[in-house]
Length: 385
Image (cartoon, rainbow, N blue to C red):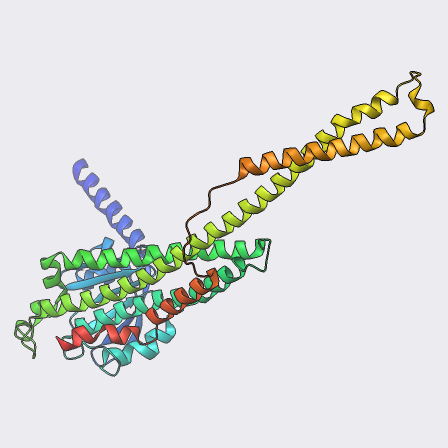
């Protein structure tokens, strides 16, 4: 019958469309890490991968902002260019190619997951170790960016506010502008990290869902050896890395304040030079006005009119002297009037430190806050619990 022909044609069209979509589906390079740190890599289409993991297509969509989500006993972590899926048995890293992650993936991450690294969550289930390894990598990346920006910014500011240089080097200003933009991007990344972690800390259900072992092996999930529930352990872990991110945020804020203060000093110096040039221009204008005023005497004697004064040779020197003396007196009078008008009240005496001393002190504070053992020292709270 005709309706059967239409149905068969529609089914064939649908099957052809699905085949076409499956043939052009995105292929992921997946790196798998198990509980013992063993690594294996394979390629799989996106459709097959999210069906195998019990996820949805949007869960494997790449995005630039950081996000942490859970679905079907899986934890999906997106960190700008890094995408990972944590399961109770393994950690999957998706499409790491061209991201310069080989050293971390194949040298540091397997040992951390196997318990040979510095992770404090090794006695806990596997998802804790995998989650802490990802958080530690992202914090280390942010800290390395800050450590790279800090000396360049401080050196540039030292050169710009140096009192021995009366002019401002434009190349230094260009370098400072580029570093300021990089610092703004870093502050944005730190802010997104803090907001993502804080959002989880405020959601008790999310903390429970991050403990994926609860659904696969409830007996392991009940309590840890220290008598603390695993959800509380996850909360302590996130609070620890939130404090680390807060420390990086404070250090970046100190650099931002230092840049703003230095820019204010540079603008004040430029305004001072501009005022000096304007005052010099005004003084020269006053001198020209004074000389032109008494120059009228010379104009009067230069006219083609006869008088008895031009016959006396002493009149020339007398008129010339009157012109210069009168011009000088008027110019001096105008300068004194200008000085009284521009005179400002004296500010109260305050003890002030040189700019270079302030830069040195802030540099020492930043170095102390970014010392190499910062990550380890911040974990003492979680270890003690």
